[in-house]
Image (cartoon, rainbow, N blue to C red; front, side, top):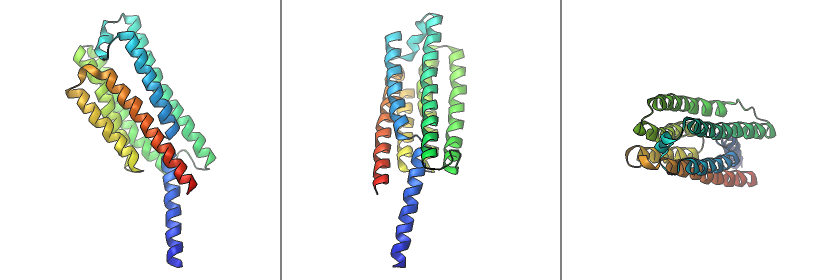
Length: 210
């Protein structure tokens, strides 16, 4: 009886840890919405440049180039804001602090990768050559994937799988698919996030039902 009680307690602790991790790292609903927003951004980008090659943005007038950059900054900023707002709401509902240890670990894992990607992006934009611009999307994919994978070391397996998928897609884009950056962004930041979000939502509902 004592053994059964101990096992039951361990299972309950595991369920609590899983629920905590699921909302401190890429909650399902924001991941889905963020993926859809990324797909919309890709659609707008294609309408603006008429190509799946990001380097074609260099042929746009300066004003249109600025609008192109602002649009993508809004997509990224909006996704981050949505994630933070939803995570904070879930934390309040479950009576857990947003700055609890799992959340801190996730933030510390992701922040350096995003910073490195931002610095490299700035340098490549200042360079302004076609190969430099083509490298931006793969670099963001690999840096983001590295951050998500690192954060996933402290949580469930799903984020690690997502991180590896981003890294592999970014590597393919860097070496073999440089002319298809927009398509790669649609597949990774768009479709990968939607699929990941659906899996997280499904797992969260299953965890609540248990």
